[in-house]
Length: 363
Image (cartoon, rainbow, N blue to C red; front, side, top):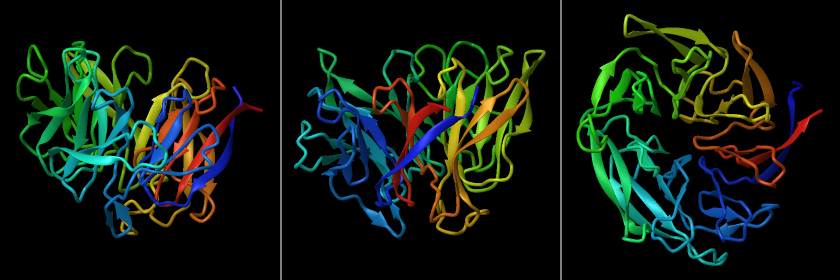
């Protein structure tokens, strides 16, 4: 099918690197939450306070925006964390009041947070909060519910692996046993028998993914019935898919390049962007990921989607150019139907500002 057309709209020059999309005020419209502000939909032209965010040089200590009703009041709050605070926090939605700031509460001390994701680790239909803490033990946090199934404003902490896993984290069924594993730089963590949260996870060493993206995507890329990996280099050049081949019950991994010529692929999304029933890969460069110290830091910036052709990935440009004209995608971007058109749009935060790329369909 023809490439998608996108209309770029700058929402803010603010330099926060994480954005969330959810209905803040329960008016049935999606809003954008990014750093110290939220922007009511559908035009996102007005900004309302969330509250101050700790600044550290070019960074803000705010590397995720995961919506969840933590306190059970019917309004979505969000979970964040960052490198310098060494903890996870949730910010309390003031019931959609556009004039009030969101109170901040600590969830738990987990060490330096690269970024955070939410996955259903134990298969009960509820998402656990899972931070990537490269230099600290791997933990997960589960919301505590009351007797009516509402959040009680607290989380239970689980230590999954008492060691350092490095940069990068993903989740999916690697070994085909029907249970999810956590994928890390050197292999994957296999849950214990029974309840995955009942004990420590075992590290199965299998490869070296380098400065891997968060997430590492677990998906059956080539349709052979076995899950593969899609990995960006968050702090260097390269975007690859790692084909899993089964040999006598053992997994062998073959690395295939997708885009070796661009750097700082830190965040990725895998889903049906163009509505053809098949998933695409959406990703782009993180602007000044290490403030000028990464390979390719001063190369052109871009946001892309990649279509699987049956033999490889075809690259389609959403935005591309010098850093004063083009846009990257931050550390925690979003793909969502912001206008109810049936087409998925892209919300791209970053040190290069906050933009929305409205999906206008094919030509």
